Length: 387
Image (cartoon, rainbow, N blue to C red; front, side, top):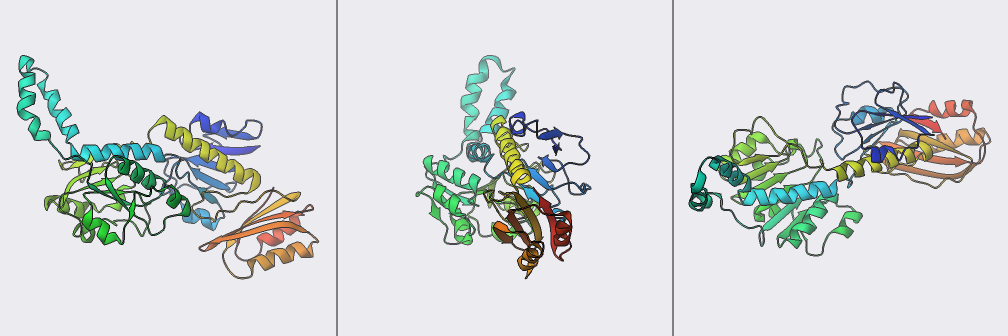
């Protein structure tokens, strides 16, 4: 029986993908084979020795100690694209509320509660305070063309915006999904200088933290409207406040409320609702459950943030899974152990990603515990598992 621990409430639609005759799923399992998590902070959490994998039912993994996991051969997954439609929809809403002063108008209208027959006259007198431009015909710069960025780009273009995308690392899959109406930025600076609206759809990393800073603001068009439904730390708040004071940024819409910005009328804060739809929660949970099941049962890796994608049909009687440091002679040392033990390899797949590598080895016969021990003792091997 495989044991799955949940650190947040996970949609039952997803958990139903883990059959009860093979999986035990609970929030208090002490020695789990895998963990499914959403926003729970695992950074300082002690990782059980039994743990083989963690899957984030969502995209961001900054709440997971990925480096510690990598050092132990624990595979960390996420679910890119599962909540893309939900985030796309709220981004489009962000475009409208950054332009038309809809929220301010609604707030003002509530003050008319006791004005009686004067309501209509007051509305006609004061409505000019809440005017704003249409988005049709305006220039939208999309930074990051993953699942969300592509979806936002396509729908914004369909609404009549002139959309330019920037992503030096765009995947082939994303490129195929991008409408032919989307222009590709010749460079980051040109996108910043020509956009009336800019929306961020990139992950948070050491390289992207504070990527929107004073130097970047200095390139932006005067009066730009900036949207951030990715991660708060992508934007430097101190530099943002200065850019607002200089009227470089007319409006900042963010899904991440921050005490530093609460007193600024030009900042619209949404309480982290980007993926808060039942459809997104179901989609993320289903993807998370299927990925963790494929890994535990077959050793296949899809959508990992630390190990390479590695997927192979089962050929042999047994399957050996090995995670190791990406250093020379690893494959030779592993296959030498198998050869010495008289074990025939039916099929094998070796993939690397940065400093890490992963091997799927199907064999025609049984493998003794002593052979597994010899492989695990090879310098640089992080994990060995047989299924």
